[in-house]
Image (tube, rainbow, N blue to C red):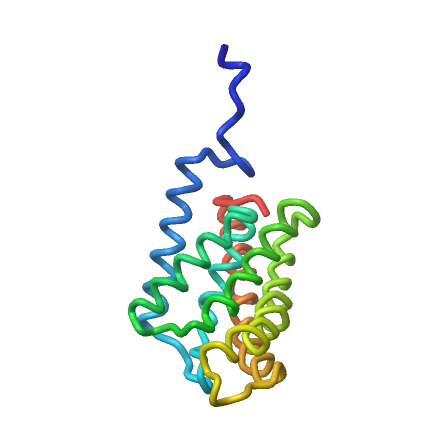
Length: 175
């Protein structure tokens, strides 16, 4: 009878461990958003630690990383340390890293795709979808958001890759 049941694990984690890891990453992401806090840049608040969390979540949770990014963004907005731009600035990067790590390339270097997801895709969504709705008085070019999001994504992605490397050296994770 037990052989007929579908396994409740994804990517080597049981459902309960996946939920616990997600909660831990959300808590860490929220805590790091309060201190040291975001970097203001126009209407956006840049947050390199979001990119770091996206890399960690993408590698450990796969596509479920997008849920972690969503929760962190919503809590940040609720606390006033994030803006509406935190959604398009974090979700594409988390999804890209998670999907590519799960289905295409099992390497910590897949964390560099966070830069593409946040710095390019997130910037485009911010300028073409979010900014016209929430800041109609101002027009922001896509290059404005690329210039805003990319440096934070580069720093955060490299931090995430460094943390993954340290966890692998300590035999906490296999990457």
